[in-house]
Image (cartoon, rainbow, N blue to C red):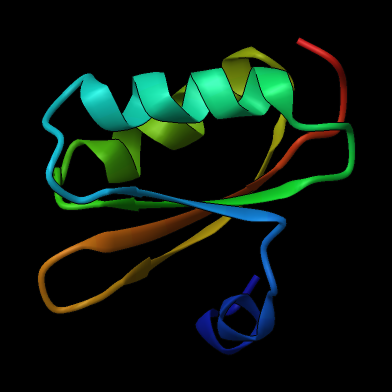
Length: 86
């Protein structure tokens, strides 16, 4: 998705993990991904640069959909969609 398309998304839930460091943001996403129903769109806000790389890799590994990343001035907004139960 383009950044413009990502900015129009209304996520099911937003996780604010900007104060957490690796692997905190990913662990918070995993917890939430397990709790949300299939079809949910999850936005993860992270101040850890590694999240922009680690999260898409994890999503691919567990067969979830990575929608994209928006880089803000001091954090990243990472969007994913739960497509199967985990």
